[in-house]
Image 1: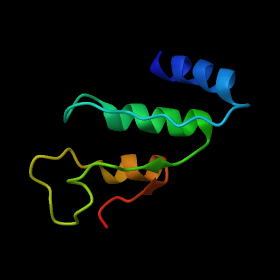
Image 2 (image 1 turned 120 degrees about the horizontal axis):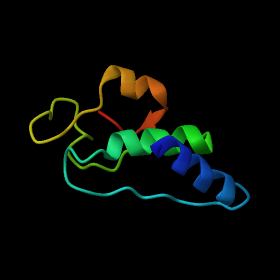
Image 3 (image 1 turned 45 degrees about the vertical axis):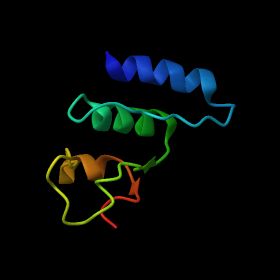
Image 4 (image 1 turned 180 degrees about the vertical axis):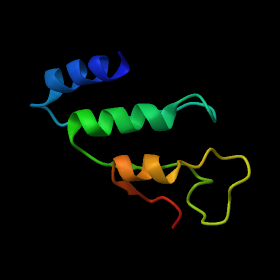
Length: 79
């Protein structure tokens, strides 16, 4: 159902340049939602999580799994 809703939004806005910003506390589903949008829009994800910028910082963050990272191209993640 989530993917159908995301796909409908994507089709509506495909002719416009749109920046989608997904915000919220840890562990509420932002990664899954961002991957769904990335697939629907055929685009990539830019991480702006201040704690996920750091390679060794895993406390207090919900680091995406290898499978999630493989589903869509991620940028600025663990740099």
